Image 1 (tube, helix red, strand yellow):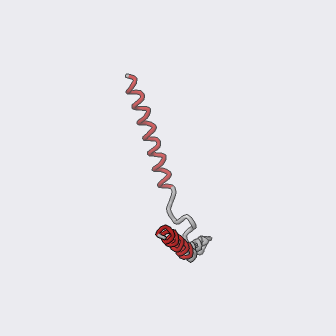
Image 2 (tube, one colour):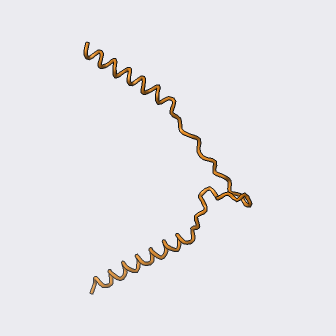
Image 3 (cartoon, helix red, strand yellow):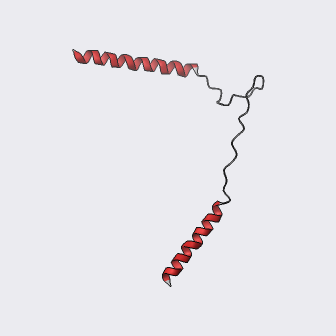
Length: 77
């Protein structure tokens, strides 16, 4: 009898959890906003300028490459 009541309790809890999850749905995606000319809205990706970040990546890559060349040349001596 103890096993039966344990199994029945597990089944009831499983059914209750299944039906409680049925009411949870994802929200719709946000409106992209458009961002056409003259609208005043930001574009979909945001208004972050890319030029500063690209320049920093190029500068860091150059510095890293020069460091590698410098350590390789000094290692051989």
